[in-house]
Image (tube, one colour):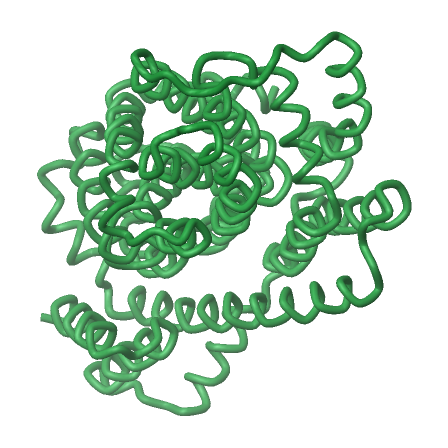
Length: 426
């Protein structure tokens, strides 16, 4: 009864058009009244305590770093480097998009920012070379959602806070599945372009590749600094965010000289607004998470899924199906903040590694970013590419299917994630 009440209020509020953060607070207030625990003071204090978290300090710094990289010339140099490496192949601009997606994912951690950058830079080039429009935008959208999986990733930070999971382990564990997502895109793209005839660029000479590497090396060093610093205990993920922001500012302003004071001010304002939205959502979710615990909703869910506790793979499959369906109609961060506190107790009860669960959860919700009807990244790609969603959905489907197959493999063979994770963690 309590679980049904909470979910019904939450779902009805969201369907009525209420912002997710306010819907969470409303559902929490109804739950407090139902439990006879309502107190405005407790509600306000829980909201403030929800964002009083040291790991969440990484959010504004990574946002600043991502914005600076996008406007400071790092993205264009990454594209140029990828172009010299794989641009000459059949369907070469698609491979350029995939390589760029993986490299940008190690810089920004934002699917929306990466997808927008990819479309604005590469889509006009793909149009000019005769690539199919819907297929090209579908690939660019699919490449953009690698960003939440490869560190530095804001969703990994959020799920680490929501599920009390080590963010450092999530960062190190996200490297292998992110690279596998890139490999899956390459496989699908190679099959799609086998019989296509499109214009290709001349093979770059060794000197051109070396020049592109020299120009892009400052951008490539950032993920190495972040991962290396975390891996060898030089700094925490939160401190890594500060390092990333400072590094991006220095490189963009002093080395590439493409960051002006005016654009930097605009970046700070934009990052502050994004941080405020994320923090309010996290605070509201933490209020709901506290009441979920008090109302023993995880125990009620455990009773429903109890027969599956002794079958971890089957349990993970059921949870991932639920997450996939929710992720299709809700954005990534709210899905994490609402469902992780509900599922985490039963995941631990089944003996499933929380880091493994967290990574699969983020991969799954990332797929929802390119599926209708919500599809945040899909909407961004359609907007920047000036194409209706109905025309682009078909282009994304082969890549969505590839990601779902990869997700199924991760569920069936957890070692695909856990073994590389232990390797990177040492």
